[in-house]
Image 1 (spheres, rainbow, N blue to C red):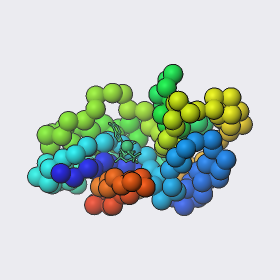
Image 2 (cartoon, protein in one colour):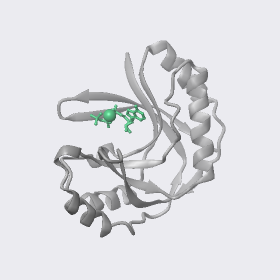
Image 3 (cartoon, rainbow, N blue to C red):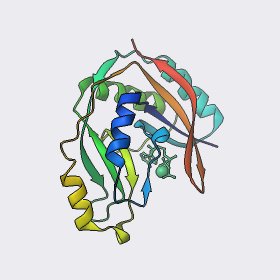
Image 4 (cartoon, rainbow, N blue to C red):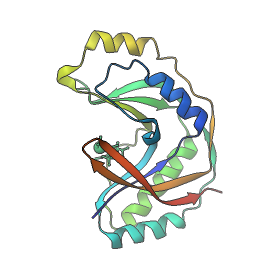
Length: 179
Ligand code: ATP
Ligand code: MG
């Protein structure tokens, strides 16, 4: 089985800004800069045939390129925070592309999480039990105004995830240009 997901990669200036934002983050596991990405769809553990089929469907997606900007910070997990992320300025073309990717994956027989898509870039993993809440609140309050440069999205990518003891490493399997 292959653990795979579809994501947007981020240009160098945005990665630099995110790396700066990560400095001093009171989190046990900060995402290494080479792993930062915006997930469009998590495919999960899929067999090679299903992945081939999804790849074929992704190749036929016709969607326009667009500009995107990251903004603000947020946490996933509610009362038990598990991730800290950079937000994304609302974007109709992003939602359009994400919807097409999700539909293409489903048509290839891949079960995609039905939860509403919340565009984000995960910056760190948190441990709710060990979270220093006041310190985190202070950290976030000082950086809520974060805004990246606008980036132009010209393609989306199929990535394989290799989980290891020192975290995940991603392998690019394919790149799909936008129009
Ligand atoms: P680790 O799991 O070691 O923290 P990771 O989360 O970066 O590393 P994966 O678990 O393979 O690596 O996930 C790859 C991408 O898919 C990440 O963006 C992750 O947030 C996202 N993802 C993983 N599981 C799910 C899921 N169940 N639903 C939605 N997105 C997911
Ligand atoms: Mg994970």
